Image 1: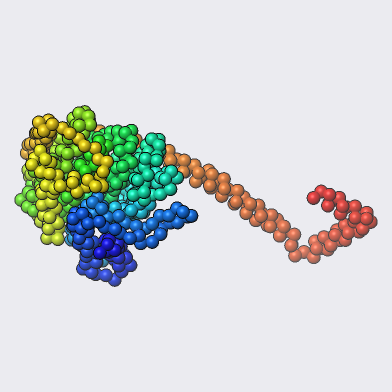
Image 2 (image 1 turned 60 degrees about the vertical axis):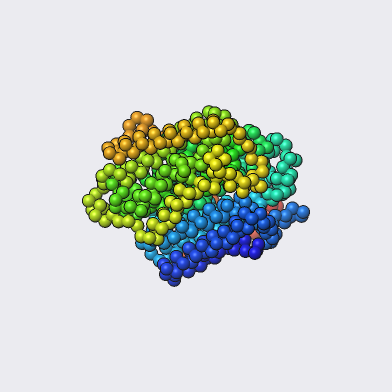
Length: 635
């Protein structure tokens, strides 16, 4: 049974190979069966392993082979199935399968070969993420880490004939490489200090590390997490990732890439709890990201951009939880966020599909009756992300906020402000899209229709999970026993406990829910009846332009680097290196052209040279080789 663990990532890899190599000959039906079926089988095996772990049965996964060996240093290609990895397996394969099914209808307009190419990339994406969470050491994690980076590049730039999409793909790839350098340096540091990268061995020997070493390693790992999970300042790639197909956005934002950073820090919780400095940095960066991106989301008019900045903000909350030691709360929010964010993105895709690729919410409105299933499921997703009880987002968000309050009350205050903004911009999006009157063209209005079942069924399943998914983490104060906390306790062994009086905890929950409710009512009242979505002015213009961060990056980083590259290309390479090489060639060419003039074909000239040569030979003979010696001395 334990060797079946390797089938979980192997099946999507096989799906990638079949669809990728056979893209010219496979029908769309065959592509769908291979693409969706491989993920479904992985999901079934993941359920079996999860139940085995839940029953406290040890899963000893044998090493497949030695990946790297140099002397006594060895890295095995090995997997580790425990409570944390088994939970992520369910999220990746479960939500991933629903996105695959949804994609079969959403991408149906593509030609057969491009349809197969899309599913091949999607399968490879899931394979890479599964490899990341299953790896028993940091090197195997890093292979999956780079794999999801590659797949994000391929899928964001899926429509490669559009240069803007290619630029967005390149931006995501390069910005992630910046973070990945930090991850790689941390791995080298571990090898240098401990001689191993295995989780078990690293955590067992962690007390041998000095305070400086632990801080440096955890900070470098966090740099990697900042890139992959889009934290300040490495966050601008994620909103631009909307260039890819909408199901890709759902996969990136919900089940795969952006959750990698949270998984890596949660997996490394033993190291992080040894560095107070790093924990403070993680919390502060996470909180700053949550607030900053929420302000941007308030003024976005692209339905996918609102959700993108929402993801950045929610990731900030997860890092806030990690930074205050609430590892379970952060992982809990990863799970609930996977449900409602996948639902929201796929719901947005359903709207875009119905409106023939319209994404501007200023051209929407009044879709409630025409898209009943999409409307209801989208509404449930909005309530969940707003943190209204008893929806899933309430339990995970308030657990993080309670831990933040125990760490420092100002963290809780700022967290509640961010939660209020979340409720506001999500219901601004909901109201302008589904309520009021339709503001688009009459031609599009006549073609609006509900999406097919292969799109609405995943929406319904995700909506159910968004409603009830939080019940696995009901706290004791609400009559639960937080099953998820008990399940993860053996992996998150260094989790900090946060004791807050029950009266205080009730007050904190009451305040956050009340403020979120007020924000919801205000947004619905303001934007359903009389949506004010004209061109923004003042601070609104700054927010709609994303605080001009992209422009700042272009001016401070991108343009100077492009100028430097242009200097090296035109001055150093073309004028310098190429100029020198070409000059040699030109000199030889010129010299050969001049020498060939001696071959004039005139007999008189040849006789003249012959006589001169004869005279020269006589002079040399008379002077007993004087001239020859003279010439020899010169050289």
